[in-house]
Image 1 (cartoon, rainbow, N blue to C red):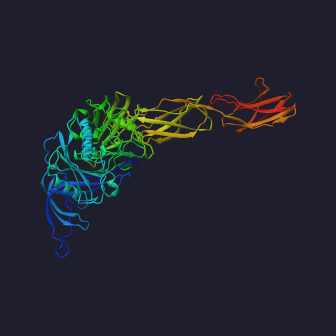
Image 2: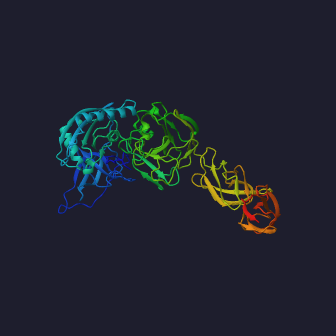
Image 3: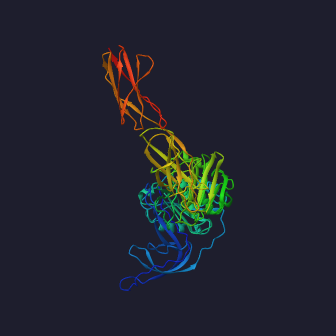
Amino acid sequence: MPVRRRGLLLPTGVLIGLFITTAPTATAANNPAPQRITGTVQTVIREPPRGQRTSTNDTTKVLRVGTKLIALTVGSLPTTMDGTTVSVLVSPASDGTKRVMSASTVSTPVAAALSPIHQLYVALVLPAGLRADPSITDASSRAMVAKVSAYWSSQTGGQVSFNTAQVQSYRSAYACGDTYNMWDEALAKMPAASGPGKHLVLVAPGGADNLGCDYGLGTIGAVEASGNAVFVSGLDQSLLAHELGHNLGLYHSNALRCTGTQDMARVGLLFPGCQANAYDDLFDVMGYSGVNYGEGSLNAVHLDGMHLLPAAVRQIRANSGVTSLRITPLSTTTDNRTLKITDPGGPNYFVEYRTNSGRDAVASRNPWHPSWGARVLRDDPNAPPSAGSYELDATPTSLGNDYNRSIPVGGFFTAASRKVTIKVTEADATGASLTIADWAAPIVPFKTTLSIPTRAWVGTIITAATQVTDLHGRETANWIVTLQKMQRGTSTWKSVASLRTTSTGVASYRFANGVSGFYRWVTAPANGAPVKISPSAAVTSVARVIEKRPTASMTHGRYLSVSGSVSSVSAPVVYIQYRYGGGIWHTGPRATVRGTAVSGRILMNVKTTAYTRLYVRSATSYVGSIFGNFATTVS
C-alpha cells in the first residue's frame, strides 16, 4: 500500500499490578552493582517500515526520569499503567537496556485540569548529516499546526485545539535514529514545553525517514497529560494529527479480517482465525497517514474513549432485546450519531454511518476507496477501553485489499457470541435505520429459508440452500438441517441429504436434478427447539432429448434413420417430428427408447429438403422438450 507507516511511543494503559522480573544476582567481578531508579512508566512501540502489513507491535517499556528516557528489557512491567511512578532496582543488559529486578509503586497517575487550547513547542530540527528542507519554515509549520488544530477542534466540539507557542530552527548534535536524545536536546532549548497541555514537536526534513529517522513517533498521554512529545519527518496534516492523537490518549485504528466470517471470539489478547492489520482503518486519523489517508471523521470507538462528547454515543446495554433506531452520518454533529452495543458476553461493538459528506468524502479520493455505509468496530484488547479500535468486515471475502466492509442495506452483522445482531433496514444521505437484537437467550431455529432453481434440466447439478435464524434474526450455527423432496404426483416427503449449518447459519447442497417435485428444508428438533420447516418450492424438471446428425442427403422413397438420446426418466415417450421445406411441423412415428438411447426411422417420399427433430412428450414428473433440427436433402 503506497502509504507511510509510523513508529510510535504507546503505553499499555492497564493497571493490574507490577510485574516483577528476576535475574541472577550480579557479582562485582562480572557486572556493575544493581541501581535503584525512580521514574514514570511509559511504553514504546516501534512498528515496521512503511508499506508493510503487520499484526504485531515491537513493544518495550521505558522509564522517564526527569527529561531522560531509560529503555527497559522486553517483558518488563507489562501490566503497569503509564504515568505510574515506580521505584525499580535495575541492572544493565547486554543490549544497553535496563533489566528490572524488583519494582514497587510510588504513586499512580493523577489527572490534571483539561486544557482546551494545547500549546505546541515546535523544533524544526536538522539531524546531523542531513540537508535542510526549504519547504519547512516557521510559517509552514504554523500553518500546518493551524490545519491540525481545525481538525481536532471539529472532532471534539471545540474542546481541544492547538496553538503554536514557539518555533525554533537548529541543527541537532544527533543523527537520525537517536530520537530520545533529540527530544532531550529540544527540551533543553525550550524548557517551557513541559507540563499539562503542552507538546514538544520535532519536525525533521521531509524524507528523513528514508535516511534512518522515524516517520512519526509520539508518546501516549491523555487530554490533560504532561510529558507529551512528537517526532515527524516532514509536514503532513494526517501524520501530525495522528501523533498528537497519541498524545491525547488514543491508540491505533486497525482492521480485523476473519476467515469466512464477520467476527471471532477473543482468546486473551488475540483473535484466532483472524488477521489483524495495523492502521488499516482508512478513514480514521489513527489509521494510516498520508495524503487522503486518515482525514475522515474520528471513529466511534475514539469518540467514546475521549469522553468529551458523551452525547455523540448512544449506549445499547446488554440484554436490551430488540431496538430499532436511526443514526445520522458520522460527519454531522448531532447527538446519538454513533452506537456502543454491549454484548452479553462482555465485548463492546460500535456502529457508525459514514457517507460522502464532510470529512468522510475523502474516501472518494483514497486510492483504495473504502466503502461508505454502516460500519462495525470493536475495542482493541491491547489498548485501554475505547482507546484503540478494530474495524470489522461485515462482507468478508478472500481479497487481500477488500475495503468494502460496511453492512449492506438488508444485511446483518452477527457478533462472535451470536448474542448480538445488527441489521441495516434503510440508508440514505440523511442517516441509516438499524434494528439491533441484543439477547443472552440461546440461539435456536425460528425461521428457515429455501433457495433453489425453479426450473432445471434432468441430470444437471443444482443447489438447494437455506439460512436458519432465531427469533431475533441471529444466524443459527452448527444446527442439523435436512433437505426433503416430494416428487410430483406423490404425497410423501423423502430425505435427500442432512448437514449442519455454518457459522453464518447457512447450509447448501449440490446434487443432480431428478424429476419434478417439491423441496423444503427441515431443522432437527432439540430440547426447547421444535422442528422448523421452510416454505416449499417446486422445481420443474425438463427432460432433454438430443438428436444425432442424420445423413445429409438420400434418395426419395427410402427411410431416413433418426437416433439420439433422452434424459434418464421413467418410460419416456419420444416422437420423430418432420417438415418439408418451409412447411409446418408434423409429428411422425414414435421412436424406440432403450435406456436413454433413442432410434427410429421415417419415410422420405418428397423430393425437397426435409427437416427432422426429436420430441419428448411431457409427463407428470417432467416437462418434455424438443431438440433443434437437422436438414436432409431428398432427391
